[in-house]
Length: 224
Image (cartoon, rainbow, N blue to C red):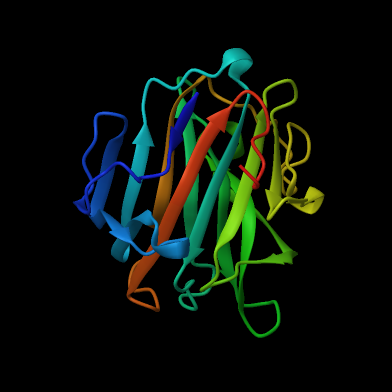
């Protein structure tokens, strides 16, 4: 349904008819910083800014789809406590904003650690991030991240480097202790990049590199 590896784009400020840009206190730049010198998309933000590649007019059949992206994050927040970040966000005609990949800096675990977690905002469930101690956010390394959005029970599943992470799965009646139903909107937009929601974070700026984005009705995997 969508793919982008940035190899045909010129280096410099990102511009293409294939996808849009959503930024505030942030930039998107195509540069040679990937594996084996390949072109990648550098996402840079200042403070609690945002910078996203935006896939519009995205209407997956049955409101379900698989996604894959390779990414490297320079650093994750270490302040303030509970700093919340998003890398992938799906929206549509309903109030729920669905975040299949994001996380939080959790001061209560190991003296403070950034942990991956699926989350959402708006709608009946409000703002939540279902982080897990078993899924620390790793900085400075390339990872292959896959996710599945299954509308039959509003289920989100994740794989890291080809390995399933069932502890991060959320669904209608299992999404971080909330006692109201979690329901997908009818998706029409998907965004990939970075957003941090708290002001005056540490570090004060963030860099994320993205490559090999794919959205499909079937699982793509990391070998392709």
